[in-house]
Length: 550
Image: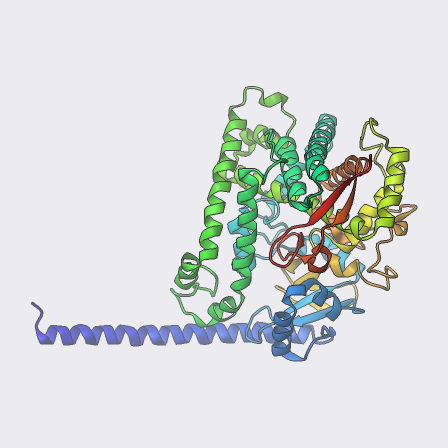
């Protein structure tokens, strides 16, 4: 039994500990506030001559504007930056990175994506909660890996992944495999659509495009022959979609918590340096149903990715394989890759090769259904130049052979870029080509969605006009940054363009497409890393498939 003096002494010690922790916590919060205030003040001074984006003055106006327009966030960004080559968005006044620059000027985009590439990289996860969750989703793959001399590993991981992945796109046997697989899977998709065509019922065409691209990249990138075209999708594809959706939803809902906790929660409830590794963040993640759903889906992805890696390593015919994973496994003897690293590589290749092309195809057929005259002109070109039975190759589907198809695809990418927004963070102080000083840690965003709808560049920007691209002159990557630009430009650009054209030819040879009743009124865009067609509640595109042979 404890005596009364013992209990009183215990309570006194607890009280003293709480007082000490209170002083410590208050001191840490004050230090964070002062540090953030000083950094934010320096940033404001250096960016004082940059015009503000066109929303209500002040951080409160910025936040209320975003919340009011969140359902149309890409249009909002386009509107507030219209006519401004460079403008700034406010953040919370007590945040270290309290300004974001929106860049429309092609010369500035070229500057931070190419000319001064080492000075601008992905945001580090300890400085940005979204980057923190991105790594939880995609691991240390090519999309999240940092580059440049200021990266923790000096950019070695990114450079190595880029070097190995780039080798496969220059191999003739890979190009042959790519053409064979796309043709096989596109014919399968055409056959699958014949039943709803006969029955006259609507079909979620976007779901079929995601299944098609999933089956294609599983074979091309990983040597796995899957067949999800006729159903709801593969186990891997379903888990990937759930992980993608829930990661993004949880990250978005974390914005207010991030703004407060990074400053006002002392260690151990907040991170030691105000980051995202404190007890409060872990507790919030653990209690969130959305994040639990994400972790369950991510576990499925990790198990499946490890299976693909293990089977590839054990394959006695590894040296004769033509897929991308085999190339990485063949290189691991000298590079000492871990199973986790190779699994992350698989995940990153899925989002690169599946989601982007499926989104582009979905928007392309949405626009064709909205513009039946364009659809008929495209079918006429296909009938004349790509009749049934003609072999579809990279050469036969080049812009010189099918100029109208190429124009339709580029118009789709202009209006509906699969990645509508991207950006980089300054790793050191810099000066932009227009003389604007950029402080370290400044985030610079470029918006393919907004750039493609600029009436000063594209007259009647909302109209689908394939003739804009005929005759075709390839735009400079920094003027049309749909595929990025500079050293991080999309490696699979030519493959994606070929894939989309081949599917379009295979389907439009046989079918015409109409929007299902109610689809046009409900169509908007999804809000994830990639921009799918959405009805607001779900990513879907309901269409009627009509036979051209009636």
